[in-house]
Length: 192
Image (cartoon, rainbow, N blue to C red; front, side, top):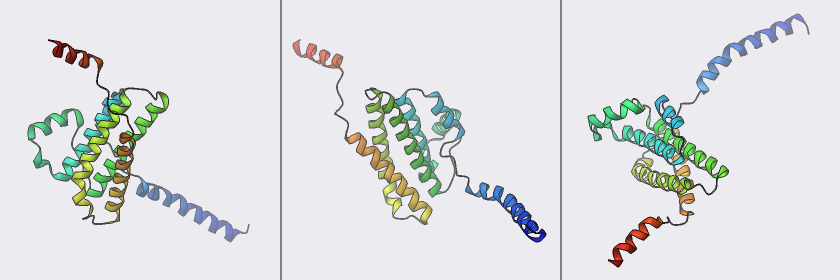
């Protein structure tokens, strides 16, 4: 390697090293959960409670999309104490957050299912997640046609794809079984 090649190589290496941190900063993605929401998820060890946290986190983003005027100041204050401030972001970011929240919920259900297929919390969690996803998608459907850019369109596509996966999985569940105690109580009342 001659001197000129060495200088060019060192210059190129230096430029690459200087540009890499800037590139890394530009590529970083947004967290789909706030710090407080992450802590609530960590604290919720039972699947149904964890899924309820994910649903509430998605609902908080819907609240921001709809406008916080729809909620009472008292409710916002109560939520802020345990959930933190409402998340912020563009429509595309908030919808993308919901898509990733539902993806994380799917992953949590899959993880529990892979360890314990007969866990009674799986159907309960999946049904409540499917109901929430259906409600949220229905509320967002009118906005989907008004997507302003590719980012919003991609966020909607990801959200709808996750919603369809959740709904399909919930539709494969057997019908809910009533508890035996409830049946005994009804039989006892009928006999009197």
